[in-house]
Length: 331
Image (cartoon, rainbow, N blue to C red; front, side):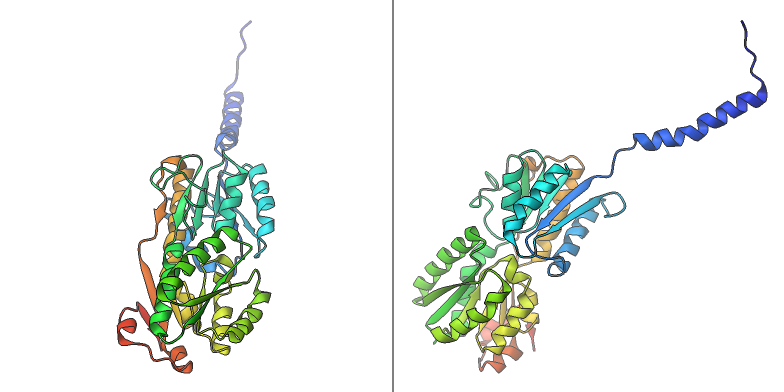
């Protein structure tokens, strides 16, 4: 039997097919990739580094809210929360985990061997057990590292150069990050021994401990304080700068923000560059790169910042050779 379709019926059928085609095409489009972002501190504290991370991500063609989604997890200085946060991201099967602090990277490494991980840390990733080598990380993890571990002993040397008559110094570490605390302690103790200085190691695991630390410094008659590179201290750099000036303790820490906020000196690698590189690697992995083949990026430039206004308030004369090496001086 022959069925005859009229012109009107044919147009209606074609119109229905045309209307249905976009729906089918949309259904076949790949889902927007999701980045699981985890950090031990807070979004407010790391606004500038986060901006650098998003900039790096954008350099690979990914823009949050447009073609990539980000699930943020901020531990608010509670390292004990990190394993559960990372486990939640693993359950959600995110496309890649961006672990932007040492405790977060360690937690991510322990949580998954399948989901790609990009870290940003301030210590040796080999020593932390994150990668097998810097050139060929192996496994599912790679990232960027600052030179914090290497420059912390240099901080003590700079403080000694500024205060040659001070023979008692102190180092502040966070015991809640034991791997970093132990590394900084051993390296700075070795530097103190070389310089003939007496070094006291003090602990702070939350901002509530800061006032007690500076009271102890006065009791010890410490001539200066080196603050070990750690996310807790970075997230409260302005507060630490203010406290150090209030108690009249010459203090050095990494990052321009510390000196800009009134801290005596800052010395360290460019944090924004490391976060930007982490963003670039995250984007490259979303495009299909294998983290095992992406060499760990190391910061190569270190910067020195001196606050002359604070030095004058503390009665310290900054030697010209030291001020001449500064990348920026605050007056």
